Image (cartoon, rainbow, N blue to C red; front, side, top):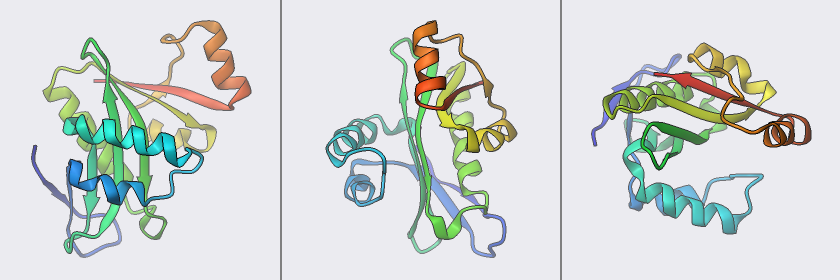
Length: 161
């Protein structure tokens, strides 16, 4: 686990990305994870801070929280699921989310992970496409694909590594 420095666009100060730890649990619980209910998000956050090798926090030079990327890894170790990417509204559009995703991609490559999957809304499609993701429904049987696309109005995207 390491810390990686970067400069978000539009900022003079350097920020850093580091792995999540269990010490981050209370900070993560205090965030607005809507539409997840608090009970589910607390349980989920316990799991992701335990599997923190592929989950990251972005902070400014003073250690103030800027964003978080939370993942889980498949049982076979060949896929990673990007479950949540959350950037504080006051710093959105400055490259923090992209930097978190790029850190994830680099770590996945070093661990031999072959692909990253995510489910997102249509409004985020262009963001993820710029980062090398494309729509891919091959992972799901038709009824689940229909549920995700039609009933939930979401997209399934994948980045090969």
